[in-house]
Structure formats: structure tokens, C-alpha cells
Length: 284
Image (cartoon, rainbow, N blue to C red; front, side):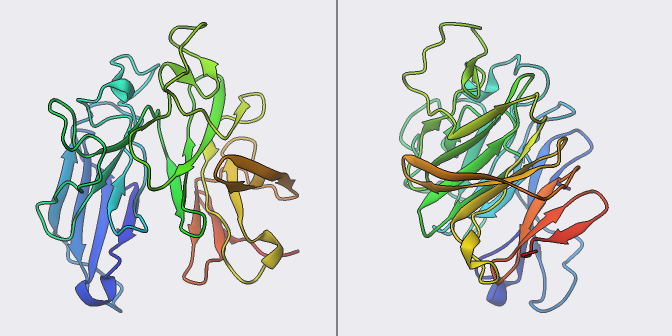
């Protein structure tokens, strides 16, 4: 199990979407039906999409609904090491991408605004590409931004910040690992790529855990700051993002080793999740 997402109309339709890998390591998005207000969903559901994978790792990890009501799915590049099949740059592959689906009815349909919807020989579900393993990403409607924590290979971790309404972005993998050339190791052409808003070397961590822009009420001085963490080094950092700018970078006096994910409740307050603990972010 990688992720669940509640339908924007859950209060009336009871739909819950689950993202998981099957016994063959394929990536499945399944729609389950619950009774709003209950604690359980039906034991069986309807498969929304089945994405062939076959590897043991790099399945991405998140499904979420965007402000546009579309369902976003972010499969990883297909496995270690170095994306040997170059899936992330291959527009005929679902892997190493962010996909955008209209699930108002099933089977899903392709939203008209998808960048490759009218191009033959390309996966029409693709919204963005050139990603290695986008474990966690989020939308921030007040700024219109999409923020992606993309886990790196051997050297660097990255956070990408782009307009949520602009499709077709190429984030560079495997041509680049964050801001460094990967294949080739030097002289890579960055002209058509969108480079990270921020990256850091593996001397500073090993696996970026993308979070959320804080929009709660309990810590007003944190409003507008995007929080993210590192799985190995256990730090918690933030910055304030706007289109084209990055300010107020900060490392917080919090130690959270083993952070696997962030959570956000209905009031906009944020949480850190590890393998054995759920912690709420509060003012000290």
C-alpha cells in the first residue's frame, strides 16, 4: 500500500482511491466505495488503472486530487539503477511521470488539457515527466504551485516547484540528477529542462520527503512555508515559494529521523509520519 485519496465529492459518493503494488509489482489504482462517516470501505472495488512495472522499487508513492478535480498519479521510473531503460524520458512509457486522469466516471477519460492528448504515439495520460521516484508531492492552491520531492540516485536530492496549471514539464531525469549531469556525466543539454527549485547532496541526507505548504491557523508565522524532510538525516526544513522565487529558507530545531511522509488534516495542520510514530507539528 502506497497511498489513499478521498474523492473531492466523498461526502456524497463515498469513493476512496487506493494506490498499491500487486504481487507482480505492477502499480494499481483502485476505487473503493465507503459509506460517508463510516470507518471501512468495501473489500473489493474497481480498478482505475494498472501500470506495468515488474521491478522491486521506484513505484512512486502518491495519488492525490488536484485543485482541478483531476486525479494525479506519479509512478516511479521502473527501478534501480540509473533508469536503465530511460523510462522517465520516454513519452511512450507511463513510468517516471506524473499522470493526470479524469475519474468522474469509469473507465477514466483523458482531460482535454493534458499536454500530449492530441499527439499520436505518446501516452496521453502524461502531465509531466523526467522524474525518478516522486515519492511525495502536493498542490498549493493559493499560489497555484505544484511542489514535488523527487528522490535522487547516488548524489543529490531535489524539490521541484512549478505552476500547477502548466503541463508537459520535463524535470530532467536521467539526463540530470537534480542540478548535476547524469547521462552524460558532463555537458548535458539543460535548455528544455526545468531544474529543481532546491537540491542538496547526499552528504546532507539520502532521500527527500516532500511535504506541504502550511495553511493552518495554529502557527500563523509559518503560513506559506513549504515543509520538507530527509529520511536519513532527520532534519525538517522549509522555504517560501512563489513563481520564480524562493525565499526564507530555514532549518528547524526538530529531529525526525525516519520520516516517511507528511500528513495534513482538515484544518490545514501538518504531521510527520515515521514507521512507528505520528507527530503533529506545533509551536514550541
